[in-house]
Length: 304
Image (cartoon, rainbow, N blue to C red; front, top):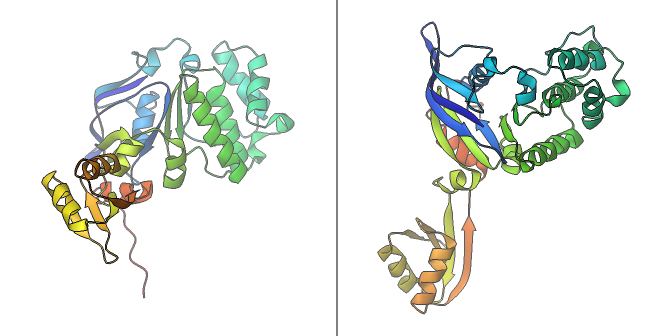
């Protein structure tokens, strides 16, 4: 488990992370989202002991990263896909990491096969494409067979097959009971991969919720219902605290109640329903709404 407690990181007058607290628990993929400059990379660097917190702390399984005797056996991370000596082969890069943490040499061959690089194991990593570099970085993260894993933009540079592979890998790691924390700007991919979300903006926590709850809390979420007696149904729903709007085609647009509640109320009052559908915005739409006040860098609108 990863636990941040009142984490603050200052760079001179800049408050990159501001009193941030959250937990990343085992058994699920937790997505880490936020606009550029939100503090995601800084937070991950502090977790990995690459930067020191100004105040607060972050622990991995109850202990700061720098205090773990063999850290690669506790936590694996991909924060920079090009973090390798360009003159070393893929095999030797991983072998050096393995020796530093007393990891058996055989594990190097295992992870190279796992990420699909066994055929280029003897090639110098400096000649790798961006996608191959990503795979080598993932292999390094998995080398110690750790229970906690962090990935920063793990699908950058990968082709569709590679993206699908990473998605399935993250899910399988979480299914094994590991803690999986992944940062990404690809909302469509997070919608398919993540179970839970930590969303930050300007260094502060915006949301800590399941993907389903995060999306359903967006103002775009609503229930569309069509009834034989729409006026009667509308009165029942309003009395229950819902907001009801009449749509041009005669259906009702209901916010504040879910499908199950709307259907139960209609049945209780003997109202015949002809349509009952939950409409939810995409994760991207919900994210844009949640972070609209926390985006520091906005491009100008295109000229019409």
